[in-house]
Image 1 (tube, rainbow, N blue to C red):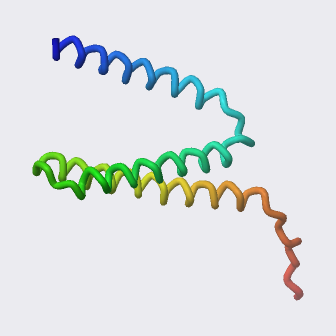
Image 2 (image 1 turned 90 degrees about the horizontal axis):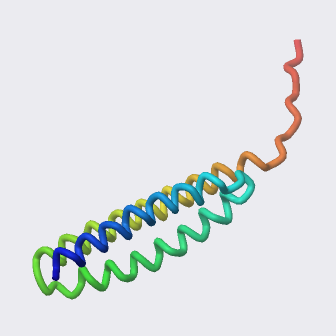
Image 3 (image 1 turned 90 degrees about the vertical axis):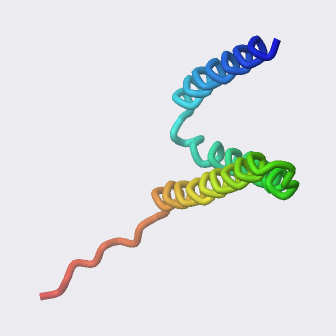
Length: 102
């Protein structure tokens, strides 16, 4: 019975990965920044959950996996904000360049 559950979960993971890739590839570049903000919000929820898991300290494995999940989520959030900031800088008006005087 456990093997069937494992295969079912693996199938759902692979299917979700392919569907997610198709959805993300279809997103316009103008929607990238709002989409990244939503992803950061989801990662923030993942950080809270992984902190709870790591803090329970039921087994050494759950603690280690919780710490790894915290690190991965925080990395995702920080890089998301950096990418969003870089994207927003692309849309800012630049000051006209002044030519050097001779």
